[in-house]
Length: 376
Image 1 (spheres, rainbow, N blue to C red):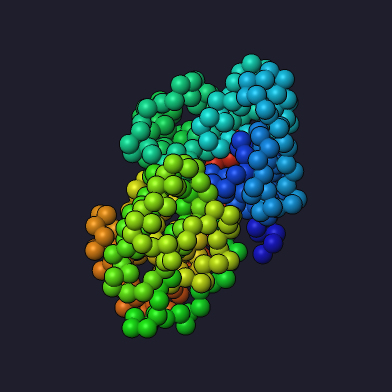
Image 2 (cartoon, one colour):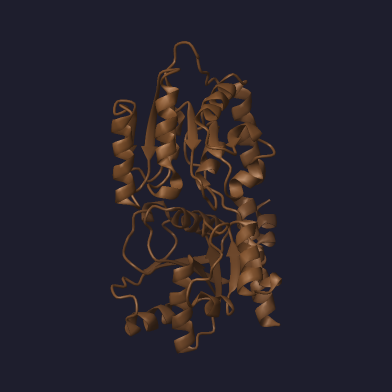
């Protein structure tokens, strides 16, 4: 079947693509870039990465065969760096740019130096339902680019608010590469004796709503022994300190731990009974796919593209309110289910709908449409 796989992807074998992001700090957009580049490399696409700064936290997870060009920019509008990144991009057919502010930077370089490469903005903006305004200068460069949003609401915004033609705006829902240990199908919870281990994975900022997770734990431990690990990078130090204060006020310092050092949670997910995701606004969220892939039951507020896609098949995993006691009742409902059967269904669903081959093919189809349109 190898010849068939290569035939399917044949159109892209000689297409040169560079994916651009400012850094490889731990974050959703950066993880998408890593995942997508690794998938495309496996499919024999000529892929490279450009980093505008020198923050390399996730670099070890990038396929070592993928060239990495480091601009090492110190001053954002340094004309020499603008010319350097333009020369770099000129060696490729498609410049696949992650995040809006990076499109403005690459777009400016292309505009000043009259670049011929085709630009694609990969938009990860998570607050699109609440914030539909167009950042200063973005519309000019979006009108001269192609667009892919991680959520249909983003593509609608690009068409209805920015004015992109509908045939130049796509949706590419996120996926992940499974590299952790699947939860054992024999996993059970003895509701009378076991102490439940919960985990919440999200960077520390207000929209991720860790405070609600702490309040949920405060009420839950009055009913049953439990612990909670909050894992994520600090985006907002003031908010992180506020979380610590709430933990102290609720007398939960022994039950709740904060960990800011972990960059790959998959290998440790098998340790937990259930994951909770209390973010009030999301575009993905990617971490739900990690739970799905490894068979870790979770409970999440319904927000983002992944929640939209999963809710009809896994309604038990999603909440539409932030009432603490409703969350507690749902947690016990999940534990009363046939958990091994639920886990098998989760892992099968992931393989059926989020397999890397499916995701890579969708991306390459977008590349093909872009290049065909530009050649006509």
